[in-house]
Length: 424
Image (cartoon, rainbow, N blue to C red; front, side, top):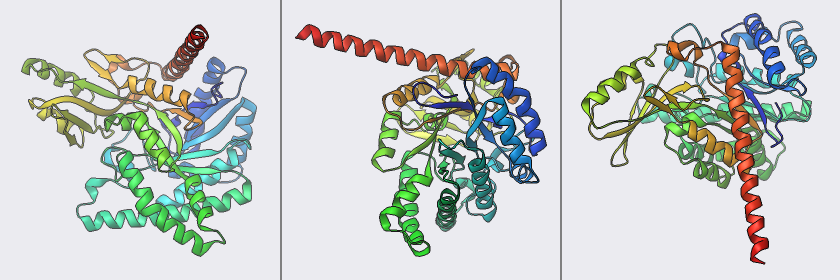
């Protein structure tokens, strides 16, 4: 949906199972027309498309891509963003750290993302730029020595530079600007704003400028601009909240470093303030156990009373440590629904989403907003609802929140103008 604030809002279709194009299109044709009718009956409805590696190959066979483009046009829909993080199966199987496979050290990840870029360029309206979110290069626990870590950074940077060159070529051929949006995540090779800025400044930019100038008839400034255009950030609010980042500072630090925000993913983590009583923590552990499911990684970042942190690779690993007296708060990587802040005795980082939306109204860091609550199938039973209704409720919450923030901004501006007149 195109919003009056100048943003495009959608939800990520990684919510829906389906690893082949046939299965993906079946779910899209089931849910998207209903959501458009309910949420945007008179205006085009944006789509955040997720294609697995297999589906990305399937859609390029025969006339499948052209047929899908025609279907979107007939339905009054458009694709402006894609999720290229999960490469393989994402539903109905154990995913855990395999979501990072293959990582950016591999040719397979590069070719998959190039394929997605060509698909998005074919579907993208002429007036828009398109973004593809991707993994944070690799998974830190796999990299057991400094040498392995260094090699992963170096090879990932080379592949991203290769991709930048392909995206430059694609723009010349089609006129479409496609950017790849790196998505920091706990335990990823890139976890937070500082690590992402370091990667850009110390590795991607210096090596990228050198290689692009060697390969293309391009100046240093043009090479820097090409990297800034085609390599951006997926600002997943859940992930940055898990890192206890201050959102205004993080967004300002990216801007100061010349790094652009390609997409904001609107997602919420579980947030738990730990009570001092042993019995209360035991009861809390029992409640959290319902979220310790076996499909996805649910990293836990624990804040201590002295401001230091402990990080656990999964909720099941963290639970035995819940009685630590120095532990004050847990934030758990579980994309819970946006539209409620409380789940019985548990809470979420919903306020972080409200804060980020407010910052986006003050300064348009990006045009692309995507709701990414993908855990409907593994939520505790009392939180499971009809999927289409749940998606609609998420998007309606975002729209209502934006309206409230805009109204408050207008009201504040009106009071400020009135006070200025009164002072005269």
